[in-house]
Amino acid sequence: MAVPKSKLLLVASIFILGALASQAMARYTPDEASMRLRHEQWMARYGRVYGSSREKEVRYQIFKDNAALVDSFNAGGNKPYKLGTNQFADLTNEEFKTTRCRFKGHMCSPQEGSFRYENVSAVPTTMDWRKKGAVTPIKDQGQCGSCWAFSAVGAMEGITQLSTGKLISLSEQELVDCDTKGDDQGCGGGLMDDAFKFIIQNKGLTTETNYPYTAADGSCSASKEGNPAATIKGYEDVPANNEVALMKAVASQPISVAIDAGDSSFQLYESGIFTGECGTELDHGVTAVGYGESDGMKYWLIKNSWGAQWGEEGYIRMQRDVSAKEGLCGIAMQASYPTA
Ligand SMILES: *[C@@H]1O[C@H](CO)[C@@H](O)[C@H](O)[C@H]1NC(C)=O
Image 1: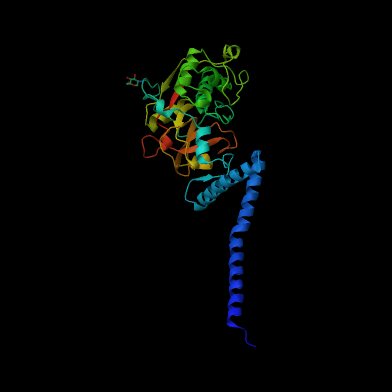
Image 2 (image 1 turned 180 degrees about the vertical axis):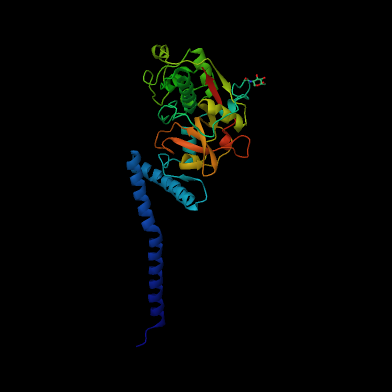
């Protein structure tokens, strides 16, 4: 039986089209479905609720991009750290930068003055101030650019414990609400050195319990402010661009450091020793609470203020002793500490 050529062609092309279509679906649909499921699971894990299905779709697309970045980075397998779809996985890098970091790096004057640890010679090879009881639990600044307050308070909690033997969680909100006459602007950003200046003038800082954190700018409560729980005498800057000096300082007490935390690899950091990407545009304040070495790589132990779900239970280990004198992400550029 003879089949017309045209009919054969038609059947053949329908078959080919069908095969192409099913191949496309095999490539696309299950991936899309599993990505949407992954987003749902992520929402449940981080308690994320969206106001509308439109908002959810926008956030899903961002989540998808970040998840793809995380997967391809981790599959690369040639880095000493891993990324993860953490609580910032539905934010674009731009959104992340504007809400989670507000160190006013551009306003800083050069580091100067005396450095009391300059002649420290015997520094231990590792240090972890958590093990010495000088570090309070991880806090969460929320959607407020108050990292500078958390960084300064972390260092002050450290020196207070070292000088009095008491670990007291101190108030960031007091700095956010009351330290407003200079360059510090609450959730709008600030500087650790200016926070120390305010604390000295203010004759101390009250406790976290007495003046709890709200993640928003508020008016200064004079009654809470007038009830200090700890004081500092002064503050000093670590000589800039010198990781050896920084090590002497961190060996002696927890230290406020400024870093460039603006890259998506920092946003989505999960574990391991962070090696960048990052530049030296200082936009975040954190507290260096130790240092060490793991698998032949030296690191700084950094207490962040983005909750205990971020990174290594709220901490990040950042590569130490890099070739650039500024240190990784500029960590050695503007370090400072309060004195008791
Ligand atoms: C460090 O040692 C030098 C030389 O002995 C001395 O001049 C300087 O004051 C010392 N620095 C501190 C902070 O003690």
